[in-house]
Image (tube, rainbow, N blue to C red):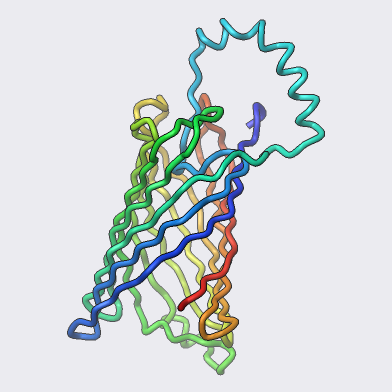
Length: 265
């Protein structure tokens, strides 16, 4: 949007555990939990599609007194980062996953995020995101092009996933919910694991946004590479295209990029 391009950068450090039980038919049930800190630059992490609503009367009331400050701030911002360091927040992840067999999996997850200070448009408190989903694999997932697998093996790496997510801000306001129905393809090249997926995102904003429901489009590229028995490097890119604009929300792309390393003890 012309009025600004919000940015969010964070360095997360989380500690977690995974408990898994084997079931018949090669199925399993697992519980995963993580908790840690997020060093925040720019905006805090928030649910997809959050609209920063403004009160018109309040904006008019402060317009004159803010003119001089905005001119000064614009001069300073032109010489500094658009995402300065803000604070250290807390975040968590709890998930239960049930796999009745090797091809089908169901999951439910809760992602709390604690904003530690009132700062700018951020309110101190806990944001919440809840997700439920399912994934079905059409093959055994064992595709490795470095070992001689060819096009005839592609079906073994094809899957389809469905996920519904809902989010709430720290003040308890309901942000909205979306449903992704994305086909995908996963494969290996030697030790590098690559997963591609994409499709429509059916998004319904909360009432506060005063925006209609819409269908956005996006995808994800995820990479994983083990550097040792206990360390795995990962990276992912998730571009999303918003098909409709409105007050406080722009039509166009937004991007989520993440990189990191996971250590297993």
